[in-house]
Image 1: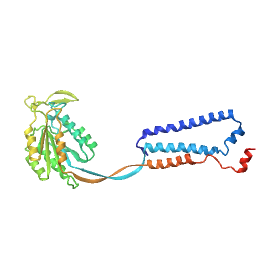
Image 2 (image 1 turned 60 degrees about the horizontal axis):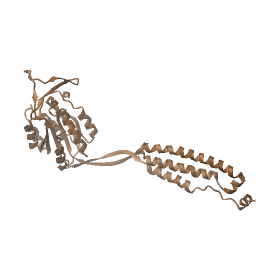
Image 3 (image 1 turned 45 degrees about the horizontal axis):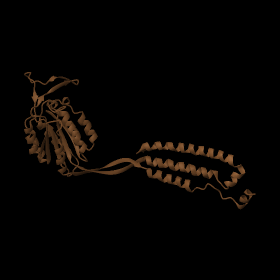
Length: 345
């Protein structure tokens, strides 16, 4: 058994308080009567009074109070099966994890800003299936399409540039892996398929046109987000959380990375979507959310959802029975005329 509002259970402490107050009043009242009347006169004044019935009424009141408090706390027992219908889109987020995403031209860094925006996006989603793909020179599905946004956040949180075996960037590899991810969707719905491509635009691969065309043929709409500034910045190298220096090329020169918006803009244009740009900490992908609402939303298969069933109704019924006893149970007996006459002689 679990409770929906367990705080109300503290009200059960009222029961012993009321019982103690009742006992104290009975003792005080009995003592006061003894001072005013003798036992024979008191029995005449309380003719046919039934002490047991009086106690039954009082304890029935306490019982009613007990069960009403339990009902207020919302007891949940057992399980019930409910059908949950979800409608939304299939969205795959492709995130660049190349070392240039560590550049701090956007505070705190390009990667951390991208993850922050994805988290804001997840907060706004309702019923959309979302997956996470990470890439550099190679691409991997970090999280398959899921409705479990908590799990998705965990995969997003552990995404780091140093987790990838390659430090270069290959957009073609990411797009082809995205194609595999969309092909793996077993459930057939009318939901739109969306790829959100987030990177700084630097591509060292053989070209991305083939990947875009293949996704287009599958009906996937590609949106791209450019993270960074045209001025760019140096690529920091961290070791054990401390800045060790900046990345250098083979000639020993410090490498600087800047946003290449033309590549990402071209991917979005060919992919039938829009290009968005984040150049500072105050920039967001809010316009993408508006466009997402315009896409066709399909109904995913209903899920059976097990939950504890609320049983407060049973507590209320039992409480009403006790309340009826406390109100209507007799606290007197019907004596015979002979008994009454004897009492007054």
